[in-house]
Amino acid sequence: MTVTSTIRYPCQFSAETEQKIIRWTEDNLGGNVIRVEQVVRWRPIWRVDVDQKGVLKSYAFKGPRDGKVIPYPLEHEFNMLKVLGDNGIPVPPVHGVCDAPPAVVMDWMPGGRDPGMVMMAAESESGMSEDRWAASLTYMDYLAKMHKLDPGQFVPHGLTRPEGSAAIALNGFDRFYALGKSQGVVDPFMEFCRAWLHRNVPDRQRVSFVTGDCCQFLSDGPEVTTLLDMEIGYLGDHLSDLACFVGRHPVENLGDIGALLRRYEASFGEKIDIDALAYQVVVFMTVAFVFPVFTLPVTAPGGDWVESQVQVAFCGRRCAEALADLMGVALDSDIELPAPRSTPLEDMALAKLAEEIANMPTDPYFQPWKRDIVAKIPQWLGQQAHYGLWAEAEDLREMAEILGHQPASLEEGDKALSEFIQSAGAEHDETLVRFFHRRTLRQCHICVGPDAPEDHIIFARLESVRDLYQS
Image (cartoon, rainbow, N blue to C red):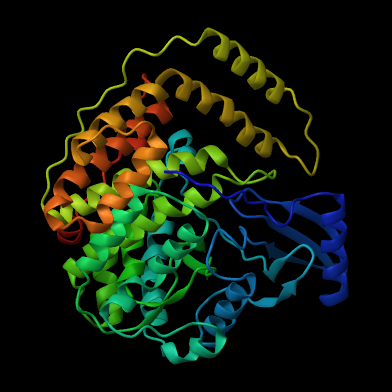
């Protein structure tokens, strides 16, 4: 893909930011702030502990990823949480929107969850305890209750009610696609997914509020304490939330997906349309690989740049697998890295950079986990130095077979293939799906290197929806 925009995050943690958080908290919520700590998340989030007349109270300040990364303003999450809370859905109580730093302020809720990120899952295997499983079943009940809420309640708070099958199915995706185009993203796989999704819309008319990024909740023992992360919630097909279970598992171990789906059916009171669910898996996986593309041009401190690169490759490959499952296309995964290209000068420079990063001092505003995130960048660059030209040559060779001519560069090839897809018919779908699968699989191999085991989490195939449901 090619991205031409440059993005900066609106807020970073510093002594000045800390003082602004303290001032807002004490002016609006009362008490004396005793601690402000940034937590490990993709977006800026601070835990603020407050002494309120001898009682310890904790709040979460959840900042925006960035106004150009998701197609909703910061206030959107506040509004969605307010409506959900008023309808008895267990979400964090909200207290306002802070201007500087920009953040939605809500209660810090008790409980834990699995982080669900690819590289973290590779380092520390995700598990499913008996208590978490019990909470997961309860979560399906809350999800069904949320999906049965009157969607009209959300319209006065900024949501548009979609009309017609295409708008209902793709109300979330189309917003991300438009955002990508506005930022100069040139990605032929994104164009292919858009064309395929619009050609294959299922006939469905029910409209529900959906989270857009489901499966996120905290639990304490077997109890659900809160549902999380509504910053991209919208009105659409309720099956789009169920698609997240297929897309997230097993990076985030969600247990027996079939059992969860059947529990949802019992709570919702309606059988799941499996074909429509499989379609929504493609929608979810498309957004999952397109979304990290927006974070790659971010130059300001913060975020996890390498995780974004990994997500593009990993989610993109699983998106191709979701498409192949629906289309009945067999995919070839027989790809191995070649011998690494010799890059002694680059290796020395990157080793020096890695050592310098490892010895960078940390403080309350630049914590060790932030340094670890930065340290992954030279490692990724080393892999690209060794294998990037191989992947580029393979991409261009296969692009030439599709286009009928040899592009001079990947940038030219991406543009030409995007234009080809805009006028291509369904007769090219199988060829294109196989190409995008091989392209993203090559990048998955580069991300983990030549010695990765075959069962590395980055190679986990997306499971068939029908098989999961019947398991």
